[in-house]
Amino acid sequence: MIGNKKQKGFTLMETIVAVTVFLVVVTTVADMYLLYSRSQRVAGSRQKILNETSFILERLGQEARLGQIQASGSFDYNGTQTQVPIYSLDGDLGISGQEIELALFYDNKLIIYVFDATGNLACKNFTGKGFYRIDINGCESLLDFSNMELIDAGFYIKAAGFAQQPRATIYLVIDDLSDRSVKTYNIQTTISSRYY
Image 1: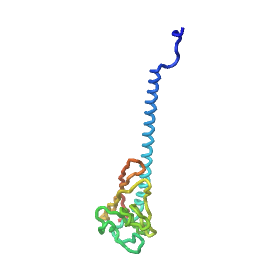
Image 2: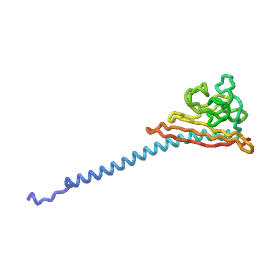
Image 3: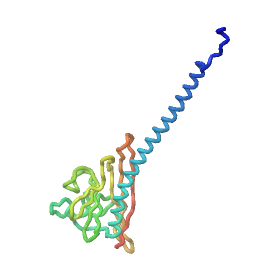
Image 4: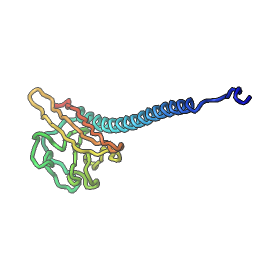
């Protein structure tokens, strides 16, 4: 009598197949979620860097368009009452090739944008490598370096010529430090002054 009774439930083979299929599905979904989460984090970090640099470049561009790109003159860079020729911080006098500074005359004052790779050229109240805006009111650091590192920056300046507007090409090379894998971004724009 015992042999005629039907058993209810799953066999061992059916249970092993069901658990295996379940584990494959869960592993696939978990991998897709982790990939999505990482790509969102990278995209958010990239967007933050682009927003910050775009804001700075837009501000610089507005001052250049509404002001005038200066090709010569002198400026008190660090508030010591010592006038230094503009475009001389890189070691040569005048505009020649890549410059680390850009001089603008805007709103009745001289404004200097400087990439300081050594930390001791531009501003006495800031230390370390940076991108600065200097005018008669003082020095302002332009980038928040909590999640990025400014690797290189510079200006290529074309002074006004016959029937040519002065223009400057600005570039920034920034490393994103917010993710484990460092990503480098090259950002570049060209601006021209309305006055020539």
